[in-house]
Image (cartoon, rainbow, N blue to C red; front, side, top):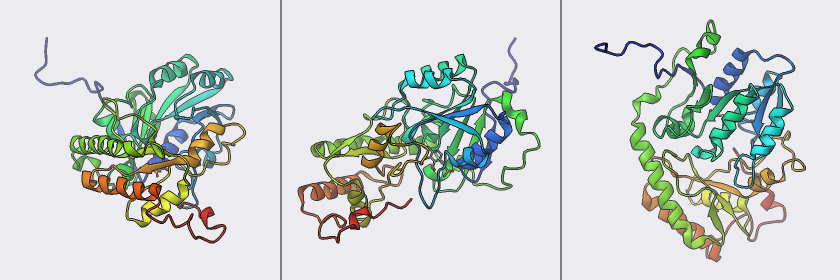
Length: 328
Ligand SMILES: Cc1ncc(COP(=O)(O)O)c(C=O)c1O
C-alpha cells in the first residue's frame, strides 16, 4: 500500500530550535541533557578565546559548571583517534563534541562517532562553520545526536540554531530559552551560496600556489559536500599577526580562528594546537566575494612577501608594536 502523500511524522525530520547564536543553542542543549556531576563533556583541543567574544564553544560549559576534558588534534587539526579513545576509556563522558572546523569534515568523523557510541557518549556536532556542509552537502550533521549552527557566521543575519534527533525533542518541553522572534535562514538560497563558497575556495587556493613558500592551505580543495566558512592557511616565516593587520588595513577581512587558545588548553599538553594557533589565518571566501577580489588579495600577499608592501607592525614599528593583539 502507498499513501497519496507522506504521513510518517518522524521520517527525515530534524526538529529545529532557534537562538541568538550558536553558544546559546549549545548551552540550552547541555542544560536539557542535565548531566550528573561526575559526567563530562569531551571536546577537541583547539578552542579559542577573545576579549570581545569570549569562547563560543567553551563558555557554555564553564557557565554551567560542567566537567570537561579534551582530545588531541594533530597539526592539521585532524582528530587523534587513539587519544580520543583513551579519553573516552577514562570514563563518564556523556557528550562528545566534534567540531567541523571551517566547514571541513574530519576524515575520521565516522570512526569518532562509532567510538562515542561504543563508550555510551552522545555526539554533538558543532557546525558553527558548517551550515552548508550539512544542509547542502550532507557531509556532516547526520551521525550525531544534535548539531549547533551559527547563522551569523554564514549569512548576513543574526542567530543560531539547534537541530536534534526527534528522540531528544521532549527534553525541551517547557524550555523558554528560544527567542520569540528570529531571522529565518531559509530566506536564502543555500545551494547558490554553497556553490559560490566552494568556487571561491578553489580559486583562492589556486591563486596562492605561487606563494607556497610563505602560505599553504590547511585543507586541500573542498571534498564533495564540504562548503568552507573561510579558507584556513598556515603562514610560514612571517608574523601571522603582522599579515592579519596588513590584510585588514588593505581592506581584506581576514580573521584568525583561533589566535589565542583558552587557558584550559595548555601549550605543555597540546603543543600542536598552539603551533597552529600562532600561524593560522582564515581568508574570506564567502558568498559576497568575487574571483577578482581574491586575485587582489593574493596580489597584496605577494607584495608583502616580496617586500614591496610595508607590513606595519614589523617594519619601522617601535619595539613591542608587533605584539599588538588581534581583536576578535
Ligand atoms: C567552532 C565554533 N563553535 C561555536 C561558536 C559560537 O558561535 P556563536 O558566536 O554563534 O555563539 C564559535 C564562535 O565563537 C565557533 O568558532
